[in-house]
Length: 266
Image (cartoon, rainbow, N blue to C red; front, side, top):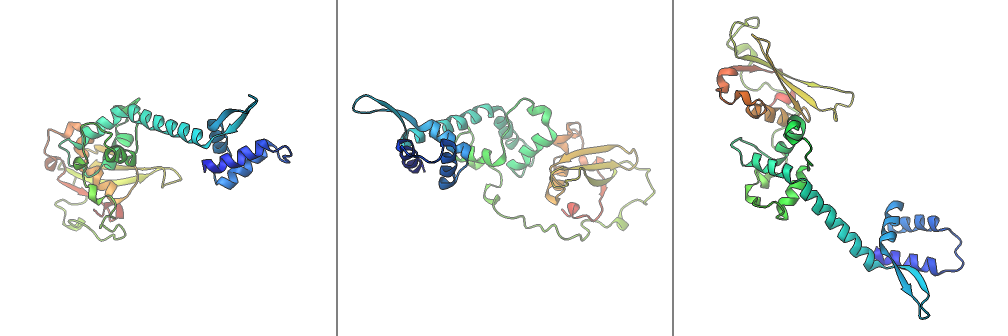
């Protein structure tokens, strides 16, 4: 690409009978290269050098090697800067991976921080899951190795669970240990999900648990309403509500009643 730009650009500026202006030329060059006009402007700016003729007359040319080296240096500086600025967030993710919680994936941790624990990452530069894995692959996280990644070998496989089925899971509602109108005993909950906004795919969801006797409610924000997401939300209840850590959850959640929506199929 750089050599092609060098050939076209230097031919253009050396020609004395150009029929198009510089802007029009750069537009055509962008089409030839298959890139944007703004990118062509940046590349040419990074590759311009001063050349002296035999009579010491100056002229400006584009040099492919100069452009390549300068832009490669910029890319390295940008990546390095991102790694440095996100160190605090990466350390938090690593700490969570090493915690006692039964966590399935890096994606689970990162989404939990961004969606539910923003106070803990205030003013931090965050990264996405794929960037975290890239850092691990390149050995850029000090003291952390690939072997510590959970379910690393399974990341590319689809979950065997099929969300299209709505067959009842667990104990049927007819067999629960209380009558529908009986609210005398603490510990029986009803679970549901709520999707907000017109664009349901992008607006996220809220998972709610309401205790039948006291009407006490637990609310967890989720990235979507998929079965895996709801499953993880329940599994991470203790972490999201630290006040539960000293209790046996089986004493608090004696039963949870859901409808047969696919989001509860796990």
